[in-house]
Image (cartoon, rainbow, N blue to C red):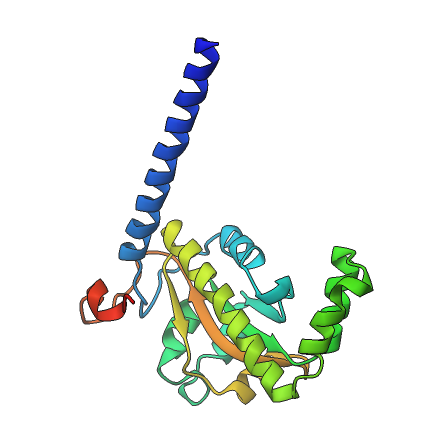
Length: 219
């Protein structure tokens, strides 16, 4: 009995130690990452980043978005002019991959897909339909963009954890990007994320973060 208890205690202690290490690792990854200005010439493996997006949380688990993974050099080149992506063009041209985070506007289809894939009985999602399908389309788009921004955060965290340089971007002409990529009408661009290899080109200013007491209000 003592041997079993001792074994369980050791296992619990190991789990706690691993948890502390994991927590430290996450913070160290956050301290490492920078929004870079350019990339090296090598291609990178972004499978873990895509998996982080897949497993990111979303309201009701609906995932009302699509992420377009652009790796074609001709498409990256086409997206790089300043008239399309402003001062982000050079890093897009150098990127291994450009993730285009888009929000969907077809609420009913989103819920239908969820019900079918998750094998959820209709009576269990009736209240979700009542809340989501009745939203005005623009309100649903705005809500979908909130959800996809959570996925963007997980993608950035995964890139940092794996020491893969990346940069989120909000500077672009959504209509031109949508036209170049021939996106479906129901998709609305929320953000871009460039991913590439070392040596990354860092911005000409230091990494800055406010102290916790400036950002967090305890009540």
